[in-house]
Image (cartoon, one colour):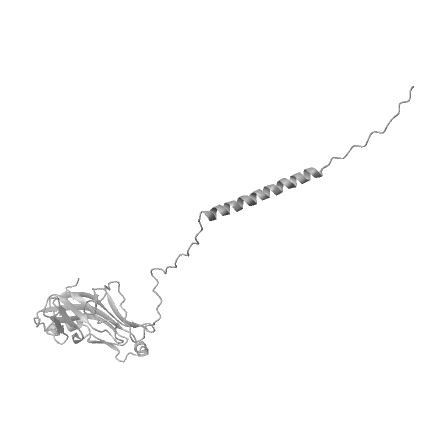
Length: 250
């Protein structure tokens, strides 16, 4: 048998992996560079178009409709009279506040609250007189106001600096003005009104501290149309020229 020389089989060679790793890293780097260049180009394009984003201005704060504006000047405790009624329609040419039946006028201070109030419930022109001493009107017409009045306690009035703690309902404290502006002062509008109604139907001429009352006031006026004016209810004085009620009632 002839001799056949034998040679050992060569060992298998290991595969080279690192070229593939380098290729993968290179692809990732290329992708990142592409993204960076794209973003830079986009920003340059926006700048070249001149379109800059404006900052949004903050909306101004708006106070609620029912919130009164703050005031730097506090009302003096002896210089304010408040009108608590929705019927206030501004001042007349006389500087008075026009009123309607069912409305109240008040004198008050921020520190002490309401000092006095008066409500006119109704106004009647030329009523039927039922008093035992009734006589025809001296000036032409009777005007009857049905009112109620309330005055704060003496301690409240004293703390507010009120030195005349009563509301006067004497006709002499009122005045009448007709539609032509002619004035009939309080001393003249007393006339014969005092006898038109029974005394128990009328109000006292003075309402003192801590008291309240209701009843009628009778005026003797020259015209069937006009206004009755009350210049002042109770100290402290009001910041207007008083209040007026039209007759016949409107």
